[in-house]
Length: 294
Image (cartoon, rainbow, N blue to C red; front, side, top):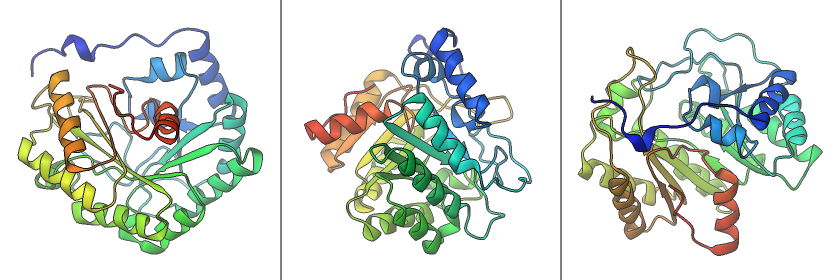
């Protein structure tokens, strides 16, 4: 691909807030997807909004998705005290909307569901008013693991589809498109009051009709919130970028999702699953519709 277009260029992380957020995270011994996945929005989220997306259950993933910068391999034992440390960092950062994700832990019988649930409990123990968004792996399709997470009472349950069905064998070869959508549908059935969220990347070689099919599948699975962003290649060993979508094309995808009936669609070059998560949720609750964040 040609060089990265101007609309994908971001500023270098700096400033007092950025380094204060990093200090707090380090002091609690925590990982973030912001750093491990090389998120392009880290300067804005840490430096401007003083927020981060916590990554629990270690920093080594049992899968090796072709798009992801997170280290893959054999994880170490998980830390039973991690949920309390996450809660402590959230309190110190004074967050009112916390996003928690994790590496895949296929080595664990429950996929890490118990730690997700305990993290919710520890956060609520310190501050019951915090809104909690969980972005989980697929738990290998385990409905018991899913129930453990949903019963903990997150405000938003999220699991990313990432790409169209055809590309799963090359992009998410250890995952399954049908299993992932089944997880989202089951989560909504377990607790209809929980907002269901998913996210996809574009630029991996998908066709427009395939994206439309994915959006229809999302609607039928009960997805309330959908994010669409540009895939950015972490290194040369990762999947190639086949296309850079123009901001106008992201606007078209947003309109497509809206026409199909998905309640909230956030589509833009730098949109990621947890991008502006607190603002999005707040506007959803108070205004009923907002999908203009780019």
